[in-house]
Length: 372
Image (cartoon, rainbow, N blue to C red; front, top):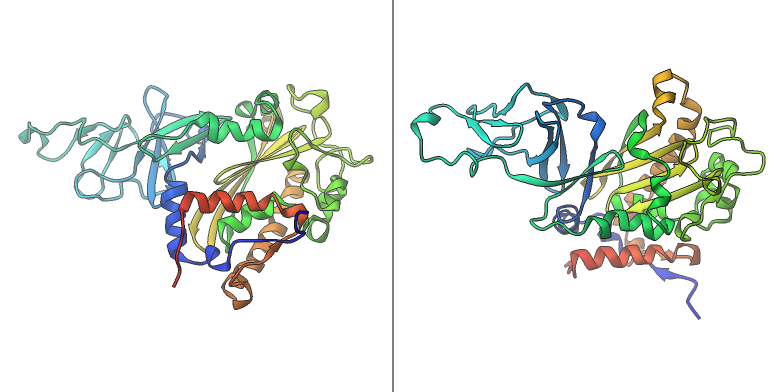
């Protein structure tokens, strides 16, 4: 018989800078990382900078319309090229230190006295390229020399959860627009946030609005971890809104068996996708330190809804409250990770046992860690 209680990770896995550094190098710098929404870089010269592990990455749209990603480092003396989170350059990226200048394709195009140095290979001294893929309207980057299979690590997580990739294709996420974006600065380790999203044992305690809309969540079992299962809306619930009132018309591709249901997907290491009939909620985590994580959350609606200026606040408010409630819980846990009471960790009840697989995945990625 399986024991009712199984152990969590020890507390230092959530506080130790050495472990966080290993996670940066062996998880975030080796896997596909969801960095930005493609529509946020609308025209040639649009750029966004993102910290991926210990590296700063600049994503830029080229004059040919294609998106490319580079390490945000000048090849001359290592100055940071783009200091802003986002912006626009005209025809090139110029280093503010010595004016080495790079085309939007990353090639070195100019520098003071460059013509007097004919032996410089402009391609060799161009920006260091980062692997990039676009999927569901988002830009995914990978710092690894040889990136892992996108199908296995990213779209494979969707297939594992929904049973078929076509189930998410029906929502046509790449054709939606951002109706609202909220950025949260969470004073907690990124793993606490993942673990919270993976279980619903807490839902009846801290999510009254959510369990009103999704009654089965009050039972404490995370429906998102049964393949193909979506949590059904309550009988009297008309939409995925803060008061259960009417939402918008379901998205055109959503099948009848997906209507009035909520699906959640975790794409390791840092993405949550929430599917409801009339909009999508997508979280991207940016781990900053062992005890701090930036979470950027997009609410995506049909282009018609966004262009019309219709009020999306009631659907945004539902999951915004869920986010605030969840992040408050994670921040409540973070200080205790340093307590002697949590030195050997805590425990998981049966409805949380699947979190143990996440812990095994983390320790498998970073390897054995010896703490004095």
